[in-house]
Length: 225
Image 1: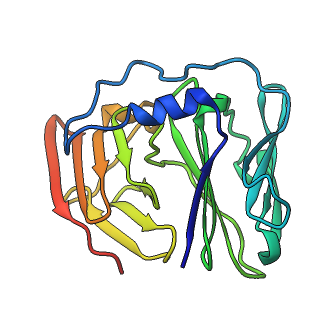
Image 2 (image 1 turned 120 degrees about the vertical axis):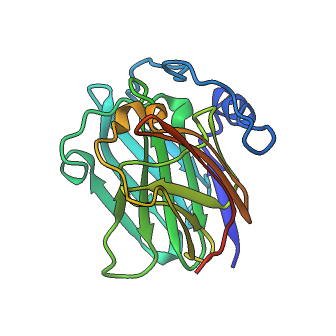
Image 3 (image 1 turned 90 degrees about the horizontal axis):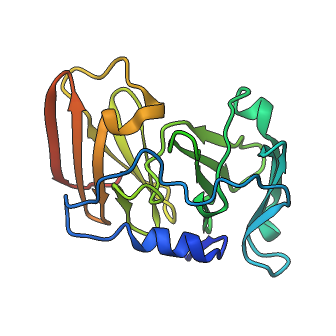
């Protein structure tokens, strides 16, 4: 399967993604906010292919917030999402440089973005195939954060039990247990108070977690199933 990974093309975004490099476990210290463009977005933002019949997504805005999202998966169909209802009325104001789009043929389209005010990461997946509902993730590990690195072709997110890594081109998932007992009371709007740093490669994961006064380090190979 072919994988197409595309961004908005903004220069600021390219520079921000470049800053996510570094060796395993060695990441920069994040500032209180890494949003470099907090200006109100008013015009629709298109990510992906400019060519008709090829995968893309268009994000429309109202009052500086996301209003609707239109996924055009070319010949594989499309989906329109009313953001307020889909995301439960959450107030999210992303900057132009904090959007990314990727498409895995046979699997689906992914939109990733981060909130300027908190830095919190989000993901939306629109699977290929009729009758399959879009999926949303409120705790994404996105490359826009300088303390998070995720290889191209992968997306990552977590819940109260696992840190997940999904291969965009195959849909297979690798899971790493966060702690032996699960986690409670995590402030996802202050992610680095819990998830300090992450470095995910195709075959390996490094993650440093802060929980109940302890540092928990995972430095493990990835197995996708």
